[in-house]
Image 1 (cartoon, rainbow, N blue to C red):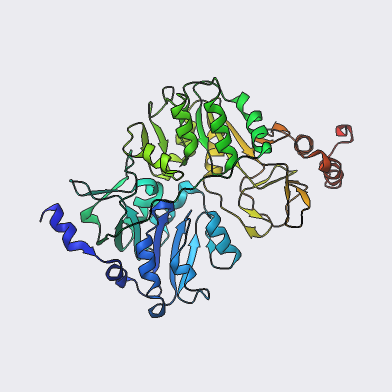
Image 2: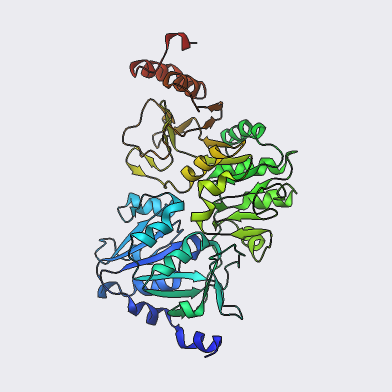
Length: 444
């Protein structure tokens, strides 16, 4: 049977393909623009026939029809490994549950512990050899597909074909069904325009980045600002080794700053695991021999990260307490995003020769009532700790960058108070004193 014969035999409509899903099944949607919109819509049409179908995904930008058609969650129960803004709103409405993880371990979780009855995801059109490219979902996709009892591939004609190191493709012989259909253009996922505080934070980080450094720029506005400012700087020969490839790397490439020429491993290639952003980004990634997409269990492994000299990891967070604990995933008990790869890259960059890890946040936020609050707090009240105090490296606000490595509790308190908003410093000092992590000689 030829490749094209296999394709025709396995071709189904979305409604035909999802008939294999039964009540009680575990179904996987993989991640971001790998989300199978046609199959999700077809499954939602089966709502009244099914109960307790449990769905996993992450960084999906919506709408997820199986969730929105079932507000009682009697039929479909959606769960996310890492929440997008859309999934965060689902959490607020009680329509999404979070699965704690670090990204390098997601596929091993599947391999050793989890059940996948049906996996379905978007892929590029099949090539002449019978391979579908897993595109921007490569970081987790192949491991999930291999664990599934049934694999359904949804061909999305808009996906970029991203060249890989390994596990970036799946062959027609490994698929059970294939579906086709017209798709909307890929969603453009861009950070909000930078605030003045974001620019000042980036200015505090730039002096630490030298020629030949390798960059990981995490999710959020501040890492993107750093990338844009580096594109206008005098720094040269930067490298890319990152969980997420965003538009900031296109800025660096077009400015001649991103060459990957000085990397210790994968020289002349930028490495990533997932990607989302603008259509300009998707066009840059498409069949680009200068980019290599790989599974996150490799990309996010601290051992892999640490092989890059002068590895620079830049991530955002929500809050830091005076002990140096970091939360990037909740505000008290309200779920916001997830651990993702922040802890992976914090660990790996700290192990790198000359490496540095920066956790960034604005010093304050304004609530819905217009009241300003400090994002540096005395101690957490139910907030989920993303980075333990034992691993926190640089913390950066618009008021400066401080290095917490090897510091005592009272030194940490002093350093963190120094980058808090001035309006809150006295109250933080008073609370640090009550917590017995303040020396009287610290007081300024």
